[in-house]
Length: 70
Image (tube, rainbow, N blue to C red; front, side, top):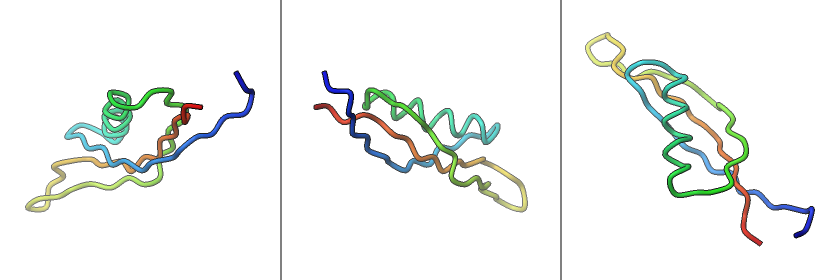
């Protein structure tokens, strides 16, 4: 096995009715179901979805990196 690795970074948007933290967690856990060797997740932006002047969802834009198989 080589000590050199290559990683790909993808952007995801997670949502939650509870919090930005849960929104980010939802995005990362969903990615983990189809990707392996997840390494780092970086929160790029946070916002909220509103309806009738009330917050109905927290959203987190997350960059997730994973290792490319050799």
